[in-house]
Image 1 (cartoon, rainbow, N blue to C red):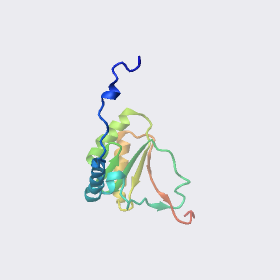
Image 2 (image 1 turned 45 degrees about the vertical axis):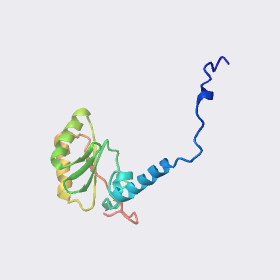
Image 3 (image 1 turned 135 degrees about the vertical axis):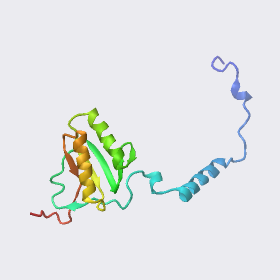
Length: 149
């Protein structure tokens, strides 16, 4: 009696007997919207399915730790932690990032279709920005694992 002085449980109305299916309608609408308006980036943001790194024999043996990673899926489009940038915006982002810490190393994950000229331009931007740890290009190990001379 002391724990329930107002007896509020007795004054509550009983739960309805019919089954409220509104939550099923909401769930069905969510699934419908995912199928109609969804893309491959809705559930898994990041790189597209067709992103392929270049291959090189011995790539895994020469791998080193990098502190900053950027992805370049196509020309003039760079994916960083903050979002998608073009090369002009990337220059400012690299300067801001290099001024925050010293001794940073940059890893560039460039798609196979990105021209080597663009990779060189990104490397030059990073060197000018102050990435003293160097710039590395991400590669996958070639099938067979044989090293080329």
